[in-house]
Length: 302
Image 1 (tube, rainbow, N blue to C red):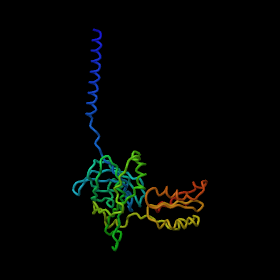
Image 2 (image 1 turned 180 degrees about the vertical axis):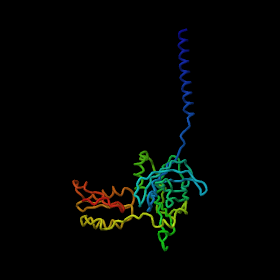
Image 3 (image 1 turned 135 degrees about the vertical axis):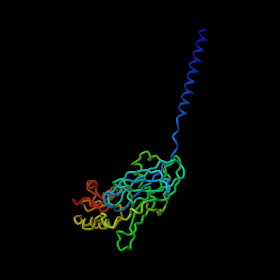
Image 4 (image 1 turned 90 degrees about the horizontal axis):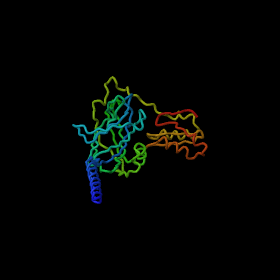
C-alpha cells in the first residue's frame, strides 16, 4: 500500500512539473516577437551662410514621401556647428527591410522653422536588408546664387547636393555616438565616386527676401595673412597656405614655429594637432594649440 502511495505521489509531482513546463512554454511563445529591422547610416553637411537664428540647429530627414503627401520624418541634432559656415549631422535610421526612398532634407533654424535654403525635396531610392547595417554615404547640401545678375545678392538661388563615400571619416563618429555599432558589419552602399543628386526647393517663394530686406544678410569676415603677423616666420608661411584651402579646415601652431593643418573630412582639429606634434620632442608636444578654425581666429596669444 505504501509503495502504491509513493508511486502515486511521484506521478502527481511529475505531471505537475510537465504541466508547468507546458504553461510556461505557452506564455513565452505568446509574446510578440521583435520584428527584424535594418540600420541605415549616413552623414549630412549643410554648408552656407545664413543670418541670425536661421543658421540650422537641427535636421529633419524624410522617407517614403511624395510631393503631395509627407513621408515619415526623423529628427537629428547637430554634431558640429560652425555658424556662418556649415553644420554636420550623423543620421541613424532603424527601418523595416525593403525598398525605401529618401525624399527630403530640411535644416531647421533656431526658431523651429526650416531654413528655405536648406529645405529640399529629392528622390533617392535605396533598399534596406533586415538584420544588416548599411552605410549610404556622406551628403553635402549647399546653395549658391546665380551669377550674372545686376544684383548678385538677389540672383536666383540654386541648390547643390552631392553624395560621396566618407566611410573612413564617418564610421568612428558613428561608433562614438552609438557604441553598439562597434561590432556591426557594415555594408557600404555609397557610390565609389562623388555624384550629384537632383533636388528642388520645397518652398521657393521664401528664398528671396522682400526688396527692403535685400543685402541684410550677415556676412562673415574672412581671415587674411595679417592674422598671423605675430607668429614665427615658418608658421606664417604655413598659414598663408592654410588660407587657400577649402572648408572645413583647422590650423594649429607651436611657439617653435612648427604647425599643423587639416582640411576636409571629420575631426579637423584633432588631425591638425597630431600633425603639429609629429615632429616635436615629447616635452614640447603639449605646446601645439589651435590657432584658426575655418575663418575664425581662435587666439593671438603666444
